Image (cartoon, rainbow, N blue to C red; front, side):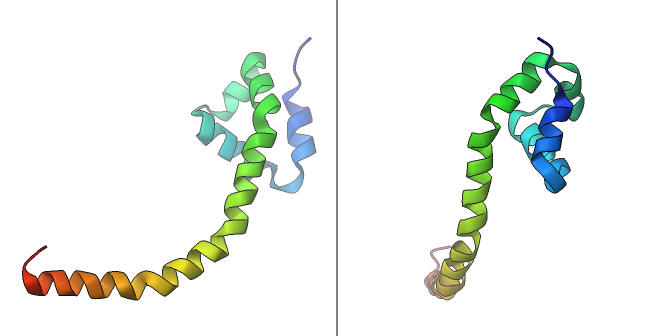
Length: 89
């Protein structure tokens, strides 16, 4: 049974180019590998939901991570200056 790469791109919807790029980066492959190699395309298709959940999780946590970083950036700066004054760095 031949795998049809087009079915995956149709199901992804409007952000398919971005998602396909992420899949290719994650698996260290290029888009041509997905289009021409059925084994690679079937593997990516079978596991893409796991990667989609990971992407969604990072998107959801982004604002929280930024807030945490914003709160603690001052602490890092203060510590760096204190260490420089003592000759630690």
